[in-house]
Each structure stands twice: as structure tokens, then as C-alpha cells.
Image (cartoon, rainbow, N blue to C red; front, side, top):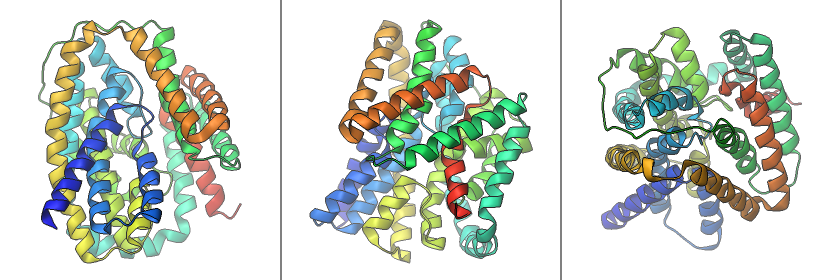
Length: 393
């Protein structure tokens, strides 16, 4: 069995590398495909859990590459675009990815450190606050709005995207989050880069040393909490952490790496402790295993450690390669090609109605970005429907 586990771990790492590199191919989609496969073909749950965990953890490392080089992010890496693109335009795109990559590696070791406290406090804490979760989501949303310079516009974007998310949820559409989030956080960023005629200079391979104390403290304080709050992700956790302790731009990239991977890791721990799924990967594991036991969680923690270390080196190698070769790539052609690929993926998975949702969400994303508020406010697309559902609306 050990050989098979290692094999599925390596396949998962490979799959996570692909989902991280290719915009639109998210781990949620792969998880949904795996669930449908296991319904018709028997796969040992241990192997499936190994595959999903290693894929999900690897994705959290690699997905900073398209976020920074293309500006095509998902909901957990959208905040990397601003500081990441600033470094990219300053010839230091590799440095930006390296900082986030180091943060993700730090998160692997933080997961190990936080396991015991999580087992001691998470279950009891959740039982105390579960009835107040919708009000906590409202409170956190208000805090995020009040950190905006343009508070009214921040509130408007939160509600506006929330209504879009609620409307799409009423449609009969396969994988509705695919066109919805791809448009808001991926295609819209690419189109804006094309509109602004972004010029990417020749990159240099450089690294920088930053203090990791503040990012670590911020990640520890916020990521475990946001990992069991529905609708909350790495972006919101990063804003809250940065509000508690102000980070420099480079520290912020480390913070994003820490939170992105820590939230994913804790989603598996939360699944075991409170039986709630907060990520697509956790949902897939829940469907596959029916109920996690202590042996499963030990396996998951082991896979997190091994796949995280492998993903760190894979991301470093790939980001260095992209940085060296990027000047030879036609940025406009690459961006348009990416948009076409996104549209094809949406058409295949979510059909024609998904393509309509993609266009609407892309236009919404462009409009909201042009309002010059933080892109995390567009997470209202998930938060508002969640609040309505929890309040029984």
C-alpha cells in the first residue's frame, strides 16, 4: 500500500502543478470530477485522499505564478497582483513569487506546530460560536469595508457582487463557481492588463531577505479562524492580519503565501474536528471518505508536509524558468490565448449558460476594479449568499 500512496501523492503533486499553472482549472473542478468517478469506479479512499490533499497543497504554492506573471488570480491570490506586479514591472517577478513561495513553506511548518492547539480548542470554540457565524461574517465584512479609503464604494462592490453570486446560485448550471470566479478574478484582470498595454521588462533572478515575524503572527492569528468560516478565504484573512500588524509589500507577499496554504491545511483539520467543508478539496475528501478518522488525519498531515516541500522546489524551479523565458513571450498573445482557454473550459464544463455568466462576471470584475477598491470586496460573491443562507433567507 505504501508504494501506491507514494504514487498517488506524486500524481497529486503533478495535478496540483497543472491546476496552479493553468487559469480556470481549479482544484474544485478536479475534486468534482474525482467525486463523480468514485461514484462509478471504486478507488481506495486512502489513495483518493492522498491525491486530493497533495493536489490541493501543491496548488496553493504554484498558483502564485500565473497570479503574478499574468494577473490571472483565483480568490486566494488576488491580493498578490498589486505588490507582485509592481515587482514584476521592476524586473523582479521571480523575487515576488519566491517571497510567496517561502510563505507557503512556512505555513507547512506552522501547520505542524498548530495541530495540538487546534485539537484542544477548535472543536470547543466552534460549538460556542456556530450560531453566531452569519453575524461574524457581517462583522468581518464591515471591518474590511472600514479599512477601505473609499468606504461607500467598498460596500457597493460587496453588495453588488453578492447579488451577482446569489443570482447565479439560482440558475441550473454545472459548476457555477467556475465561470463566476474565473470572470471576477481571472479574465477581468487579464483584460485590464491588455487595456493598459502592460509592458513586462526583462526579468532578473533576485531574492530578498525580509523579516518574517509579522507575517507569521498574522497568519497564526487569522488563518485558523477564517478556515472554518464559510465564504472566507485567504484574501480576507490577509487583510485582517495586515490591519492588526502592518506589513511591508514584501512581507505582505510572504503573509499571503502563509495564509493561502495554512487555510487549505486547516480546512482538512476543520473537516475532521467540526465536520464542516470550507474548501472544494475538503468537500471532495468528505464525499470520498464519508467520515474521517484519526488514521486519515495522520495521513493527511503527512501528505501536507511531503507535498508542501516538493511543491516549494517545483514552484521555485518553474518561477525561475518563467522569469528567464518571459521576455521572449508575446504578453499580448499569451493573455488573449489565456482568455480563449478560459472560455473553452467554461463552455465545456458549464455549457452556454456558463459562458454568459463568464461574460457578465468579467464585466462586473472590470467595473469593480475600476472603482479602485480592494479586490477582496468582490468576495461578496460568496459571502453575501452564505450570510443569506445561514440566516434562513
